[in-house]
Image 1 (tube, rainbow, N blue to C red):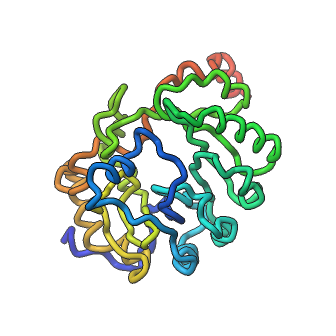
Image 2 (tube, one colour):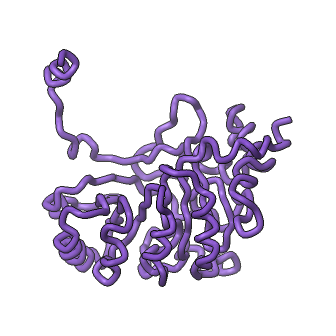
Length: 294
């Protein structure tokens, strides 16, 4: 039966990415942030901000297979975690990444440089702190030089990127959507993969600071996507458990509308961006032909 779970010996097959929310605290007040909207308008379901217990971070790290992506963030600013460097060091065989607003890059430089593999710095539309952020980025990159982490920009919404281009970093453009979730995208609809199933659901696990494990990192104030508790269960039990298997069956049948969180989500696991034509380098077809002939 589809909802009976599967043999636990299958381990974490299919899992490629895990978000570990070291902290749900944040040091910015972004105008398009769903959490800030919930805080203002729906205080009865507002998040209780805090940090993940270090022992739980260790427990999670010990269960993960090598060479998968571990994103040390979810809803919060990861560099606010008091033991960030120690936490990152626990994931010795995984690809370690963060998405940061950059405000603490200089203060936490020793815990970031050479400690993680990739880092996205979020640059947002209409950010009152944009000039301060730009200055911090410049100083950090000068300090980091050619060392890890591989750094790129995550451009959220309509941002004039001309001054950022001088850094020579990749720009991952993202389209803004409703503050309450991944629906009603501003510029264009998200890409749907040919398999007709959400790639995030197929390969992703997100664990918040309390240990709640969810199917993805979509904004979920009612915790509709929770499939287990990493404090009480192994990741194996959660990933291969009855609840996720039942929801997987719905996705395979083209009925994501039967999965509570997925029912109002427009995202399919393929990040949606704009302005790619402006930043890509044109490649001559003859160049590729010569490569094929070599």
